[in-house]
Image (cartoon, rainbow, N blue to C red; front, side, top):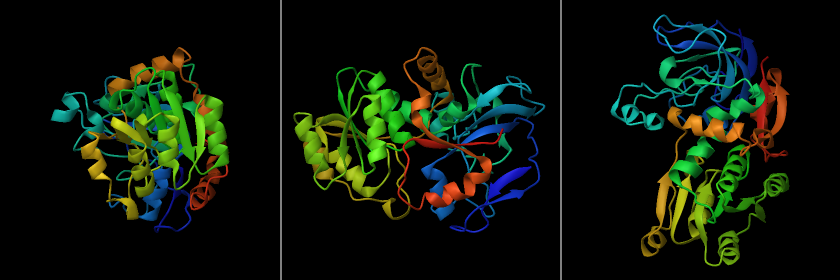
Length: 344
């Protein structure tokens, strides 16, 4: 099969021929129709994740059709339209049985410790626990983001932040993940302030209904002024020490911060304003993917028109353009929204 692979960290990936994957007894092989280009893929390529072994096929968000199922799989069949969360859980541990597979200690991740979805086929382990059936009405290009960015945003806003109607929410970083956070917070009835350095990203956030603020040294103070004392909820959807600190500083007393963007590399262990957290009784929450059980609510929001996935996609490319798309993430983005590559 064709796949995009890099043989050394930071070396430009190449489109190559590799052996097709072998289907595990409890797994499934998925024919990838569309795959997302995510900042987390860039982190893997940079060598920021020690689970990545070379040579490596990246890609962790995808949508496609079941091509083969293992002999022990009961819930899915060849031809089913599916996606999967980027966290593939074991299905049997304490966390999985408690309905929190997104923090499964035995989790596997395509594009990190498993070969990823920048390929014509990808394996999903423990298919009965991890595959999610896609309704016929959802286009594969739009569904690719459900495995990571849209799903992660839904969990961050609805489950972790528990955003309520009338609350004020600030989202720092309005790439594909951030725009999904903006959309989902607006759908929850919040007033949203979107912060980014990119004019295109801010314009996309404004088109969704958010108030846009350009990144600046005093952005936290500006957020507090516009919200009469601070936001109820802040989300760092970029993932940097600077944005995490700015997000926390944007909160009102007893506000809630959700760290959604990954903090890796030089930002893996940032200093945070813990004095402010204590004095104002702030909450700091992590958010990691989306539980399979939460997909029903997410798909219902899409089906009922509360979420328009087309507004989170900025660019659609051919799979052959993936190497250039990876290299482009070394530079500031020139388009808003997520980039999706089509394999079919």
